Image 1 (cartoon, helix red, strand yellow):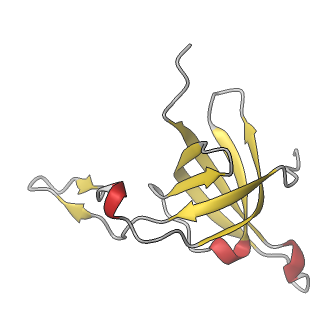
Image 2 (cartoon, rainbow, N blue to C red; image 1 turned 180 degrees about the horizontal axis):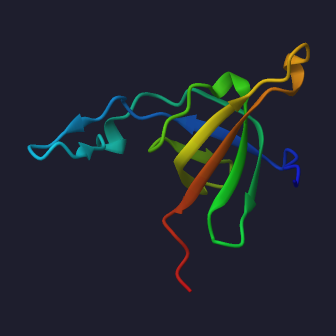
Length: 110
C-alpha cells in the first residue's frame, strides 16, 4: 500500500446532502454555484491512479465527506468525490485522515 504524503493544500466544498430526487427517484445534485461555503483548507495529498481516478487524503477535520462533494487545491484543480472513508488510529488522533476516491473535474482529454 502506498502512502500519500501532503503535497498540496486541499479545500473541501461540500454540496447540500441529501440530494433531492426527480420524478423517477433518481438523485439530482444541487447546483454547485449555490453550494454552502467551503468547509476548510488543510494540507493534504493527491495522487493519480493508473485507472485515471485520483486518491486524495484529507485532514480528518474535513469529515463528513460525501460523494458529489468537490475538493480543490491551491492551483484551481478540482475533483468530484466518488467515495470517502474516515480512517481513525486508536490512541493517535494526529494521524487520522479521510481517504477519498475522486475524478478530475473536468476530466483530462487524451
